[in-house]
Image 1 (tube, one colour):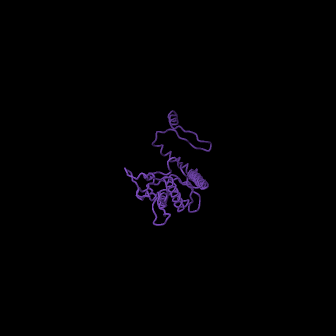
Image 2: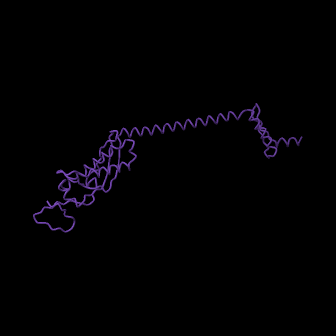
Image 3: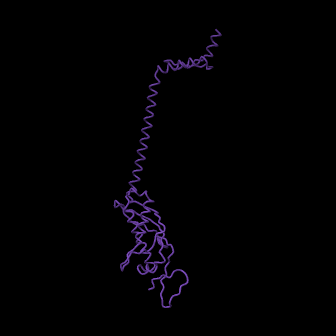
Length: 234
């Protein structure tokens, strides 16, 4: 086998040679025609997580011959890339606790680095490691904790809302009681009488001719205008 890859373009080969073709363009995971794979992973507390990732990757055309020798045809390369993705995602997730799921950007960076590292493999015959492919973009599309954890989070939120509602109700009741206390303190008979006399004094400079006169029998209305006319007629 010729270790020199046939790069894109017009190439001359001997008639008895066989050529294995596969793309060296940037590719995507999930692969074309495949459904989205939900990768099962564990958090640092060993709680099951479901991770959905997408990424773009590419092989080095100069390494095509060696990749073919060590890995095989294009389907086998895809299988090796898929295994590296699963390993990197799981190794990345186990570094974070269930309380860290909001750190999506940080988790994605860790997974991307570990997936890229997993794409470096050791030759079967020994020698220095070589790279199968390179990650060119990584996307953490979804990260789901176990259903019981989601339920516990929802229950906690509901409890906090209930506590806040109860706290508001108690505060409203306290304010109403304080208002009633102030009313009971200020609206004494003596205070009302004093306010009544203050109103009478203000009527000296007022055109209002109607006065309410509180008595034990009720609050009769006294019309000063009629009283003045009756006095003049007498």
